[in-house]
Figure 1: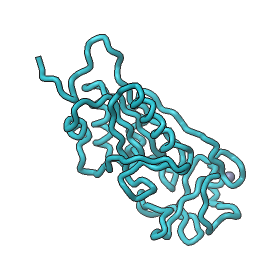
Figure 2 (figure 1 turned 30 degrees about the vertical axis):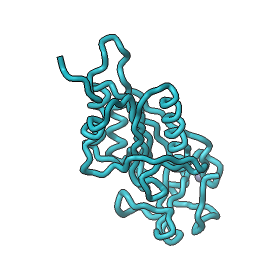
Figure 3 (figure 1 turned 45 degrees about the vertical axis):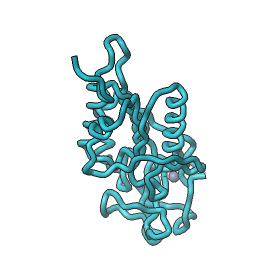
Length: 217
Ligand SMILES: [Zn+2]
């Protein structure tokens, strides 16, 4: 008989925990949904942790474009997510925002938490980087998740087509080479990101708004 802890196996007969990945371009409402989901689970008396990495606020928080926000645990590369959960009393679920920036090993740890310990994991993030290449963590989530869901909350390209891909814009020009992760859209950064349809991402056309800060609305 093992000692009860945050990581005790789920009792026999209970449902399997799930690993779900919600993905979409920036501004598609991922963080808003992450916060809503945390609220819903919390209301049912479930205990969870909210994790993030490189939130737009630059702080250990999950914030959404529409003004919601809450404190969160900032994930760093050296963090073992199983150990993180083990350090808490009882955890029923994890909300993992910006999961595309986690390490591949941390995605494996999320799967361990689901399978070995009955923790539901709801991961949110970008699928692909500014080159339209999958982030390694997102790729692993596609491979491992029980359920994958594309979020498309009316984020549009300047042409009106659905926005699918993130372009990196430096000095008003779209770039296709560089580090996979560069934080932009802050006052201190010359880098910004713009959501485009596939056609205009491939063509490198930013529309009339090129050079100005843009939100998706
Ligand atoms: Zn377009």
